[in-house]
Length: 251
Image (cartoon, rainbow, N blue to C red; front, top):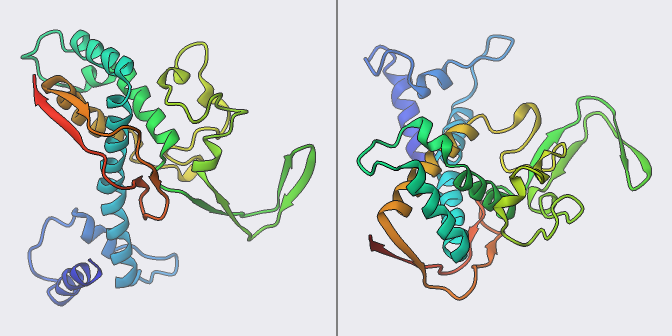
């Protein structure tokens, strides 16, 4: 992939006057990024940004839709409620699936959030302390020195029983009225947090909910596994380990 992108970038550098686009394509934008001193970022950095964009915009959504569908398919009671919600929202089978209807699919939305809580795509979030940061934990006071790197694991943080009761159980209702366990500050890190949280999270919800809405309405989904697959923490983007097949039958 690095070789492929490097070749494309070099070709763009070698032919600056060729008509590639109106200059608003993402490659043109990346190649024009400058530091405060006016220098351009390197081709290696452009390549890294392109690869990051590809993984962030495609692979994570693919993994998220996989986990969400697996959890729903493995719980008949949740599946029944999902189908009922789809029938209620899409009361006219011939109506187009639009933005407003997608937003009405609250249970599907919460199922995706719960799947991300149990199986976040990234196992680590990294931040740099820009100043000394006082932290109180376990009744003790600590200081994170300026310049130190801080590593946070959503996989650990989102399974803390003090925040999410029965943390290993798939329970989309934990996000609903009366519970809203995710509202404790920085308790839910499915898309990171703070100033550098994922800017594409709203698009990700629309994308995955659109895919799953069509699948659940058009097909009867039956899991062909006895238990949920283990989580592959060694993967770059955390997906299922081993086979986890599902049968699709046209409704």
